[in-house]
Length: 164
Ligand SMILES: [Zn+2]
Image (cartoon, rainbow, N blue to C red):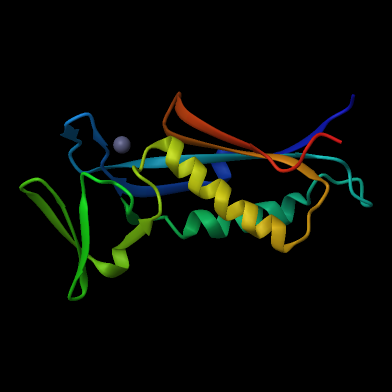
């Protein structure tokens, strides 16, 4: 069996964002990271002997990363947080702690928590849609790594079709 994979690496795909995570009965203080992203696409070779064009993959990923760069990332599916629109802002509450952010500084994500695992899942979902729109049927798997600090990262990997 032979396998091919293309990789777009972290140093090119950096985003800075604010977040906090709820865990057990606690909520982190608001803070930020310089996140770094790595993407891997596995698949058969296409007629150009590519798995996927690097230039195109970098262009897609740069755009997806830009969507969350210099933003406050808030999860919409966290049952410990109350997120609501208020005038021109987004209010988020955890027990008696409240934040009010300008709407344009916030990205609301359909995830339960802004962990590196969930940010990787989110980016993979966005990438999967972009790939599907391009009809990249030779691809067999995609994986996204989100590193929130040096040596500390999470991976999400998804098979795109059954083994052929
Ligand atoms: Zn953090």
